[in-house]
Length: 130
Image 1 (cartoon, rainbow, N blue to C red):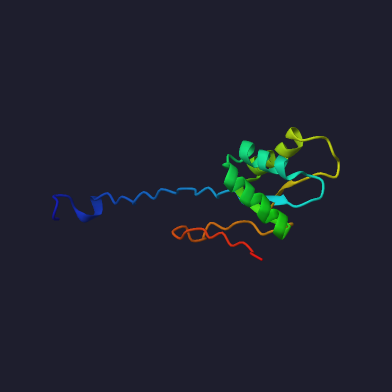
Image 2 (tube, rainbow, N blue to C red; image 1 turned 90 degrees about the horizontal axis):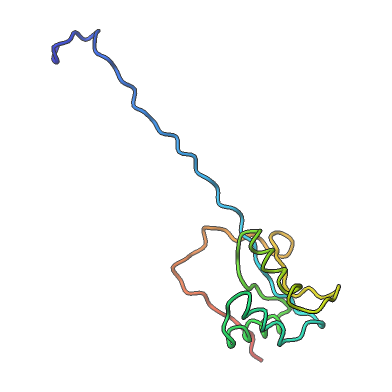
């Protein structure tokens, strides 16, 4: 009897555990610029400036990377945003069934972006020179 009550009369309290449900982040999709024979270069630069908010020189470099390599990842978004941004080339450009310069892809062309990628390093832009 340390606290004045007999041992059998003490109330034992269980510690309250809070269960916190952790919501999973949605998978990320890449918006890819594909090189084709139908889309003019000036139009691609226009779309990159208008939709993806790139300046003139950066848009030109991205367009040339896609032209030289066949494809170029422009940005990474959630599925809805990536599909919406990829559809803007159809809204801004002339109607052509075979023209699809911007594509939103997850598993078909490239793997989804993982959240465990390093964030502290600078992104490198490797281009072929030749």
